[in-house]
Length: 125
Image 1 (cartoon, rainbow, N blue to C red):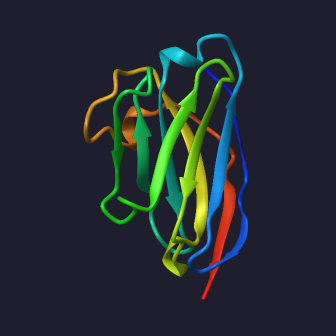
Image 2 (image 1 turned 180 degrees about the vertical axis):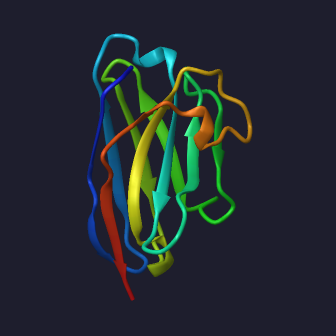
């Protein structure tokens, strides 16, 4: 398993930006598809974005398309989530996750076996 540590969360005004980072331990980071999920208070965890092992393929939830960008740097064992034009409804704990399965369009939380502890993102109106 890979160990994941998220950072970069915080408080931002609506319309602002944040970049989340997720640092992975181990030497096999490039063998994992990666994803970001979020959970708002009183709601179920939901998919946000995913990226293939090489970074050549990505997928997004409809609610964040055009605003969020997932990327990875395999040399740094890190995956990022750039969040622009943030809205109050983006407020949630954001989790990084790793999957040993091949990336596919529609990859979901059941495919991910390793999870970080989460980082809080709060967007004020």
